[in-house]
Length: 589
Image (cartoon, rainbow, N blue to C red; front, side, top):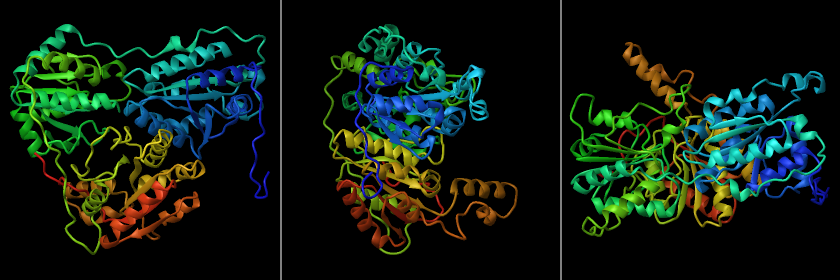
């Protein structure tokens, strides 16, 4: 130890694996995971030893988390930047129970995560009294099987190597998703008689995305070549810059208006004149009008295509031809309805948007005139006041003004954030919602995204705009950011309320003829008001607030951005009223 009691790492020598867990650790390393996110647990104590004393805590390096849910959230945030999975380890059945919400978020978000679990000895004669009985679960993977792409419980170290290889391949193949590999402690602790011969890891790559079927592709080409008022629903896409550029080229080539979804990462520049707005589940009148007038609709893996199409073309009414590009159906299950309604489509192309867009461009560019040149459009919305309380719309407007000429990465935005409120011009500008609606995930997803950007040496400033409920539930994720020196700005949209539920209670009261004024009961975080900045400081992160006057907001945001640019995490507590923005910040359509 040093004079402050800090532990010093003792160097280790890596030779041939001696134990099952050594071989498993090597299997994790060969996947190229730079990190493994975990909260420690005795069920994988042997694997933990191998990660530290066999691999030397390098490739992967342990990212220590205060909760298993944070471990999954950090891996999810990493994947939202890189399109690649990260490893996370969770302890036994109890740690897996903690992690389930994060795994569900990653599942609904179609994000790859490789979750390593463990269990006490399945051989009852080898269990320690009490603890390894309650931490042994028959079919432990059944806890998460309905919202993972695959799970396994290998019976030997060599089988565990294949399991990790298969898990990583399946998690990475689109649509991405979490996978779970459960390790019996006996498999981890056994001594190896010999090191098994293995095929080279390069022979186990994830399969390429499929090419569009010729007939479906040709049908789509004919529809789009003739369309005069096409609309693109730009949905789930990768963070690929070439894919981003291709979507712009296709929209310009066919003159298509483009709509994006507030729950999904940005997939089209909001400053492009063909962009006509973000939407949630309910279309605005202007977006509904554009879609009603469309003579072709191209859906690029849209979230809830049926819900959107049925608003525009109700069953039994005439419809423009709808082209659906998606292979999401490959992972639809009966347990949860995250796949949404069954959409009525005319052309069904079973691949990912990037592949389909590239093939459409190859066919359409020789047939259609060169597109016109489009000028960049700025979203210039000034706050309505220069002093006084800060509304949620004010926060959005001031944030837009402060960051409009800065490369930022919005890792999250709170519920009620106005649409069309951010200038998004790069795949990393906005990472979308958490997927499954799990409150408390915003802080950890932000940590994972910021970690990935730091390692990429990106100049982009990661910013998590989180609600106070999201922040308080996930606040201990900030300790990992502090411990790992991960630069990230948290802006807390603090309305001292679980307002989504308060809003629902008001609606219920009105529908029943009861006083909506009582909707705050059991919803408001008051008496006392939580000190959110103190929560952050307890995790080792400083900040400022509460900011209650709009006159002080821009300067506070600027100071926070400079702190992050200097390499440190920072928190700003901004007080806003309990409200949602029902109108867009800027009307585009």
